[in-house]
Length: 506
Image 1 (cartoon, rainbow, N blue to C red):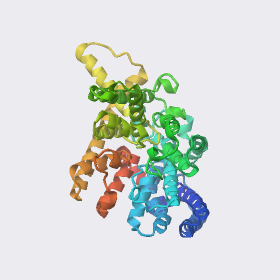
Image 2 (tube, rainbow, N blue to C red):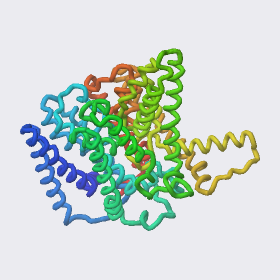
Image 3 (cartoon, helix red, strand yellow):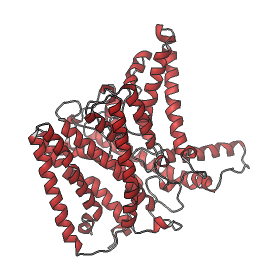
Image 4 (cartoon, one colour):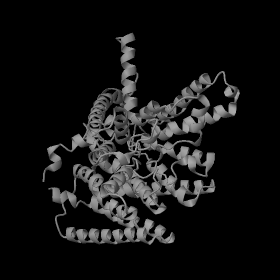
C-alpha cells in the first residue's frame, strides 16, 4: 500500500512542476553569471524531469484503480514530507556551506508557506536562491488553494467541517454533482479554475509594485509571498523596499484575499446570503483589522498624551496605518511589517506588542485560503455559540432567531470548532514542551510553536524582543519545528482522519 501511495499522480505532478520551476532560478543565475548556482538548479531540473517520466511510464501500464479522496489526503501529507527532499537538493548545492538538514528545513518552511528562514539575516543567499524560496512558497500556496476544494472539502476538513452535516473525515451524504465527481476529474477542474486566478493576481501585484518604484526582482518575490502568505523577502522585509506607501497599500488589498475564500471563489458557503460582504469570515477579519489598530492607536495617544507630538495628526495617521497593515499581515499569517510599524512604536514609547501578534496569528485567516491558524470561521462559530449561551442565561425560555444554516454553525459547527481548538491547544502544549526539552527557554519555545502551527515564520523576529536564531537550534529541534509546520498546514483533524482504517485499505 505504501509503495502504491508513493506513486500517486498527485506527488508525480508536484515533482514535475517543481522540476519545471527550477528552470527559473537557472535562468536567473545565468543572467547573473553565477554558473555554480545555475548548474545546481539546471542539473536538478533535468534529473527530476527524467525521474518523473520514468515513474510515469512505469505506472502507465499498471493498476488504474481510482484514487480515493482519503488516499489523496495521504498523498498531500507525503508531499509535504517527501517533496522538500527534492526541492532542497539545488538549494543545498547552491548555498554550498550548509548542511542538507538546513536546506530541507528551509524548503519545508517555504513549501508550507511558513516563511521562517535560517539564512535571512546572514546574507549568505544570492538572489537566485531567494527566488527559489519564493517560488517554493508560491507553489505551496497554490497547492493549498487547489487541495482545499479538491481534497479537504470532500472530506469535510480544513474548516469545511464547521458548515457540513457529515463528520470530519467522512464524505457527506447530500452532496452536489461536483462533490460526487471522480477525484482526479475534480482535481483537474479545480486546478483549471483556480490556477489562472492565482497566477493572474500574482502578476497583477507584481506589475503594481514595479509601478510603485520597486525593483523587478524584489517586486516578484513580494508579489509571490503576498499571494502565498509566506512572508518571504529577499531584502529583509517590506520596510527595506522602494515601493513606499503605495506598495504597502497594494499588498494590503491583496492580503484581503486571505480573509475569505469568497473573495476569489464561490465554492464555499458560509452564510445564507451570497456575496463576500455577507461572509462572516470577511466581516470578522475586517473588524479585527480595524479594531485592533484602533485600540493600539488609542493606547499610543494615551501614552503620548503629554508629549509634544500628542497633537500631531500625521504621526497618529501613520501609527494607525502601520498598525492596520501589520495586523492584517499577521492575521493572514503572512508576517510582513509596515514601514510605519516601528515609527508607531517609537512615537508611543511602547515595546513590541508580541502577544498581540501571537494572538492574531493564532486566529488566522479564512477557510480554504493560504492563511493558517485556527481560522476565522471556527472563531465565528464559537462566538455564535457563546452569544446564544449568554442570551439563554438572561432569557432561559427564548428561541434562537438564526436560520437553518446559522443554527447548524452555532450547534454542530461550534462543537467541531471547539474540538479543533482543544486539539490545537494540546498540540501547542506538546510541541512547546518538546522544544523546551531540546534546550529552548519557555518564551522561545512558545513563539516557535505558535509560528510553526500557525505557519507564521516571521513571528520569530517580530514577537520577541531579540530575534530567535534558528541556526542555533539543534537537529532535533529543527526537525520538530518542521513537523509543527506540516501539522499546522494540514491541521490536526486531517491527521486524525488519516488514522481511519479505510484510508489504508487496499
